[in-house]
Image (cartoon, rainbow, N blue to C red):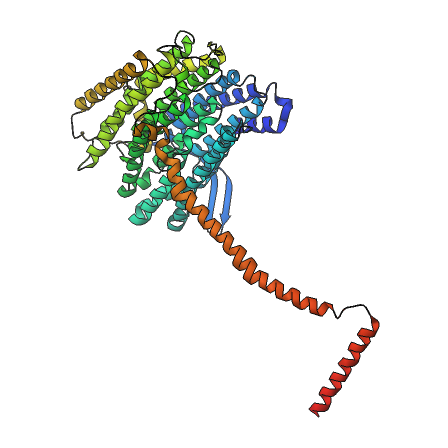
Length: 619
């Protein structure tokens, strides 16, 4: 599974221009081949008893230092293989879409090499049997995302966006490195089996520190508060990148990390509470930002941030939420990837424009794109019996379980945000496909080719039916039970039926409000000034300004102070003063080395006289 896309990346990068003609097709075939291998492995595991569905595959001894050793190996279990299916299937569909989307790009061979590299790195991340090997995949994903976001780096703004994503993620990576250091100190190992098996004997304080450090790593990769500022800028990459990285795979890695570390979080309620709080803050934050964005891709990015927040909330709820989080992760991967590809198709039709205020009335021009995008839209807003209704409503219901303030805080936040989600996603849908045409004169909307529309159709079918296929049938819950265990769910603090009715009413209210403002009424081509909250949401709630004021600014000041100190004290007073003294002394001594024999003879005579005088005095 890993070797095939990795081979594709190597062939395309090392083969150079000689692979331009057939390289993209090879990369696509190898990605599908990886998916086929994954299916075969799942069939093998399905033939085993549930308690035996965890296969360890040692590869080689990787690190050996004294009593410490790490074997590079893979863990094939229901959780890792669930992610394998999402990565390889959706990733392969995006490869096919890219054949059409990048058809005329002169560097498409390099683009497909990066796609293969990303898929291989993501597979390493989810298949690793230790935190150290997971970290290799983690950094490989970071590298590939940097290369893909900045693929068109001839544009300085795009290069800056790639740098921003890379740097913010490195801050999160410091948390993962810290967590591994604490694991080494506490358990003397980094493999899952030892760390998770020994977690019960560790102190609560140490487990909390490990849990918080892991959360910092997860927040960076999954664009969760306070490390979410990079996601909107990352839309600078080609649209298939947004679908692959920022909808279906990379941003879900943080959720995987927390879910994989279940044994640690189950023993540290404090760290788990912080996970739930971070998820709640992010799901509300992303929804608020999504309401104000006019860039279609940035609006979808804000939605992704919010939906990942739902998943983080779910894993923060403990055993009750792990399976729900993975379920929503799967359904979200389909409908959000489909909508990102739909956004790319709209851009393809509109000369690469992204401003929804310059769209409108596209439903009759790009009918296939409209229909497939509509499938993702009705899924994410929670229309009953579609994928998002099955998965997101389960998280909302689970958020109302508990005692004290928590079910009311988490539950109401998740409930209200569901209504906001319906509003801003409907706003996006109506502004793009309905209302009056607001195109510029040079726009000639047209439908995309089959290479782009067929993957969108497949994802649309998943958006509509995947939830019903996985949940009422019990397939997913029974499949993941060997990993997360069987959990008896407590009843929410308010009846489930009341929650479902409230979610449905809020969904209808959000759609109706969006229709009145953006479907029926005239949409201004130039965005009005708006309220203070609207202006703040357009500016990502001033997250970049906060980072500038509290982090970058003070850090720059400290660095500048150190530079001035070095220049003044070290180079000036210490190094400079010493150097000046030695230079002066050298100048004096240099006068004696004038090259005249008579001067040297006189110096020797004076030395002899001095020595004789000293001997005479001593006698």
